[in-house]
Image (cartoon, rainbow, N blue to C red; front, side, top):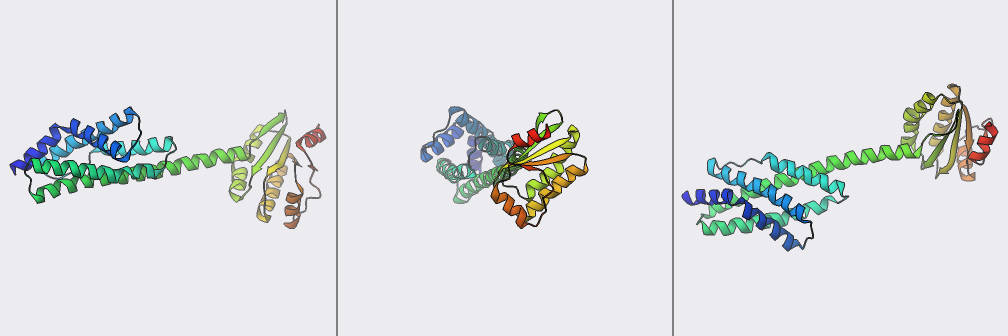
Length: 272
């Protein structure tokens, strides 16, 4: 077993040079163009990994994934999300990294006269650690991606129905894009309360930026108008195109008593 101990000790004591070899081999084999700081960061993580790995082989032979590797994996995912990169850009490096580690460990196994079983044990152990790192990276990437998508949806919702003050007691509510049930819910739950807080007397609902609406949305929009009126707010509609008017008429909604103007300017003049 002395040869295996020597092998383990060598890995721990030469973690720096081995880590640099891993990084350079992966970069060359994949023809990657990455900044020097990223190489140094990856090498620094591998130093911690190999020091821990070699020491664990010496003491018990049982390998647990170090916390530093878990944190590095999460940071790797964060960097990819921040740069707008795809998960595949992370995943494609792992098979090559496993291959490079296998080649290095196989070479060292020969140098230290390890048995086939000992060599296989070391290679399997480092592969297991790298697999955990990949899984942690993917899991973190998915979590961060979902969070970013949720934040983006909220931002788009806010942009799709902004409240624009034009006079002291008049605001314009421009509706933008495709108005679906999700946006209707956002208007009911978030936009109307904000309008109420402003204590305005008139709301001009501008449909000129709406791409399309269906029967359900048309009925929901009427509900929004009715809600504002019940709050004592005068509602005026502007910017209804012929196709939107047809959709509203087709839905069976009676809007004969609703004030409607071709443009926001005309609606604003009527209020003045």
